[in-house]
Length: 143
Image 1 (cartoon, one colour):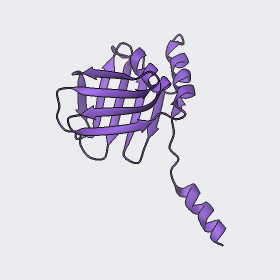
Image 2 (tube, helix red, strand yellow; image 1 turned 60 degrees about the vertical axis):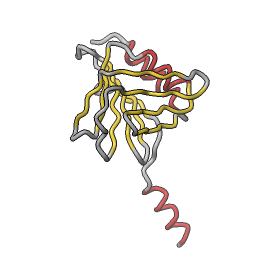
Image 3 (cartoon, one colour; image 1 turned 90 degrees about the horizontal axis):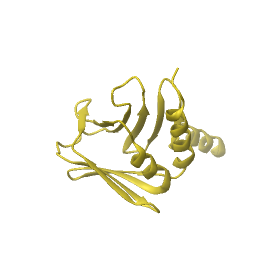
Image 4 (tube, one colour; image 1 turned 180 degrees about the horizontal axis):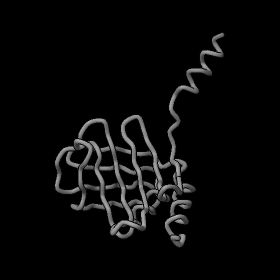
């Protein structure tokens, strides 16, 4: 009976890990107990690439948002072109290209979103194949 209870408990726990989906738009996502991250490519948008980081608590107001990638190809990307939505709980950045972001996600160990004194880290274990699928999706001709 104990074994059954342990199996039930284990299967009830949400699975975390990087995922890719080609529909309805190319999407790369992950979530932790603290936050979720989503990278999308939608060629119908004027800035087709977007990255959103959502938390349960609102993000603080801040002039500069940073993404710090740590690992074999460490990199820090900063921007003042971010916006907050969903009562401040989702931070989004859009652009025409995300080569550095995708490289950071594919080739490093962690990605940390920083705004003011809030740091949200995402482990990048298992991200590389999903990033490669995202790149192939974004590079595919749109119909």
